[in-house]
Each structure stands twice: as C-alpha cells, then as structure tokens.
Amino acid sequence: MIPLTDIKKASEAIKDIAHRTPLLTSEQLNERSGNRVSLKSEHLQKTGAFKIRGATNKVKQAVLDGAKYITAASSGNHGQAVAYIANQLNVPATIVVPEDANPAKLDAIEAYNGKIVKCGTTSAERIPKAIALAEEAGGTYIPPYDDSYIIAGQGTVGLEIIEQLPDVDVIIVPVGGGGLISGILSAVKQLNPKVKVIGVEPETANDTYLSLQNKQITAIPPTLTIADGLRTSQPGDVTFPILLKHLDDLVLVSEEEIKAACRFVMERMKQVIEPSSAVSIAAVLSRKLAVQNKKVVAVVSGGNVDLKALQDLIQ
Ligand SMILES: *Cc1c(COP(=O)(O)O)cnc(C)c1O
Image (cartoon, rainbow, N blue to C red; front, side, top):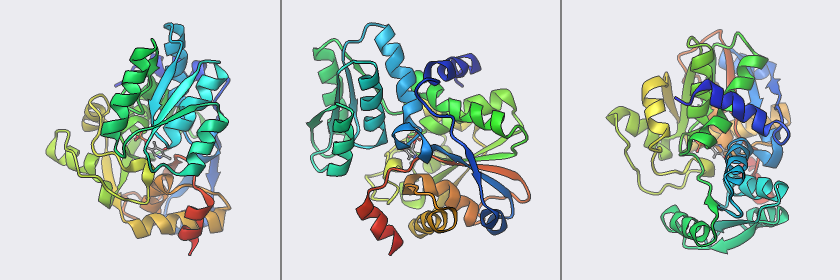
C-alpha cells in the first residue's frame, strides 16, 4: 500500500488546486438500492474528474525535482489534468493523443495551453512517444495510474470520504488501470480496515476481474465499452498487488446498466456524469452488491461527456 503519510502529503500538495467535492444524496437512489447511498462527486472536480489530484501531486514533485517540461499520453481526463496543472505551474506540457481523438477533448487540452502531438491509435504507440519527447528535452513523463505519487494523489478521495462520512460501511469505485481504487484502498484500509472497498468494471473491460481470478496480471484485447476511461487492457504493476491483497470484491456491470445509471443521475439528480463514473452507480442500482441497509459511498469519478455522446445516452 501507499503509506498514509504520503497520501496526507498529497492532500497538502493539492489543496490549493483540487476541490474538496461534496457527497450528494438522493432518496430515490436509497430506495432503489436498499442502502443509504452518497455520491462522492468528482464530476464537480476541477477539470471535471479526479485525475487532477494525482496529476497535481506528481507534476508538483517533478517540478521540485527540476523538470522543465512535462509530457503525458492521453486524450482523456488524464491529459486534460496534466495540461491544466502544468499551465498553472508555468511549465510547458505536450500531450500525445491518438490520431482519431475527439476534437472536443483536444480543444480542452489546448485551452490549458497544452501542446498536442498526434501518434497512432493505441496506448502502446502513444506512451513510448510521450516518454521519448520527455527524455529529449530533459522533461518528465507523467503516467496515468501506475505511479506512487499518482496513487497517493487519487488516495485523497479516500481521505475525504472518511472525513465527510466517518461511519461509512462500503465504498464503491470504478476501476480502469486501478490508480483511483488503489489510492482509496491505501487511505481507507489504514484509517479504518473495517470499511469495505468494492471495485466495478464493465463486463467488456474485465481485465482486473480476470487478473484477480488468476492472481496475476492478465491482459485483455482492446475493448469498446461506452465507459471510455475504463478501457485499459490490464491493471498496473504498482496498482495490482494493492488490489490483490486488499480489495474486498469486484463486480461487473453491463453496457445497458451503465447507460441506465447515467440516465438515472441526470433525470433524478440533475447531474451530468460520464459513463466511466456511472459504473459505481450501476452497481448500486443493479443490486449486484451483497450489501443491504448500509452506508454506501459510490465514487462518481468524472463528468466529461460531450454533447453528442450525451444525446446518444439519452435516446
Ligand atoms: C481515469 C478514470 C477512471 C479510472 O481510473 P484508474 O485510476 O485508471 O482506475 C475512472 N473514471 C474516470 C472518469 C476516469 O477519468
């Protein structure tokens, strides 16, 4: 696990950048799930997702260590977060994105003065490019999840949940590469080991589910789940051992359940959330959790969904 002291340091490092997001509640959500449910609302976070927490912790450390240039490989929330914090710290950033990246996402990166380099269509092409660009210019490459500073930053979500709802019983977390959930596990299990932490993946992006079953990192072929932040093909070398040792359970949700959860939150709670973050609510609504009459926090990891995708979701 990541030491609690490192997560507390991360909390200090990010406090002038990241919001302390609220816990939102809904009677309908309680009724539908049979639990007292709160949503940890990272869709209201700076740059629209929790990724700013880890990115801020990591980029600040890189700058302290002398980095004059920052790179990342992501057209999604991680790319936006890295561009944002580099801009705040007056360090130039280059974000390597796929050739077919969504123009709306590129606009967001450029709005934070991030320079865009297009490369290939897979992360296997983008990541070496971003690392090479950093090395050429004495800069630092910022990975999306498999890094102790990133995980410590994401772990501040767990610290806040325990502060905001000290008697929480269960925390439900979307799982991509596992940075968010391994940070939350590290914070929560050191503060109160009785709190259960349950991960959620789409059925079609079940790499962590399979890895846990096999007790070793297991890759899956590229997938096309609507939850685009969870399309990673395998859990990380740093994140997976934390999950294997400490995770209480991992459930899978279908594409239909993810869409229904998005619609529920928009219609009933008037919140715009993105499909990746809706998996935790889908797990709660589908009653796939073996949990009843408990205080449950579902982490809503982000809200970055463009209007076109929103239209498809609503129809
Ligand atoms: C990145 C991301 C995730 C997955 O986080 P990991 O740390 O890769 O597990 C979930 N939801 C959203 C909105 C994201 O941007």
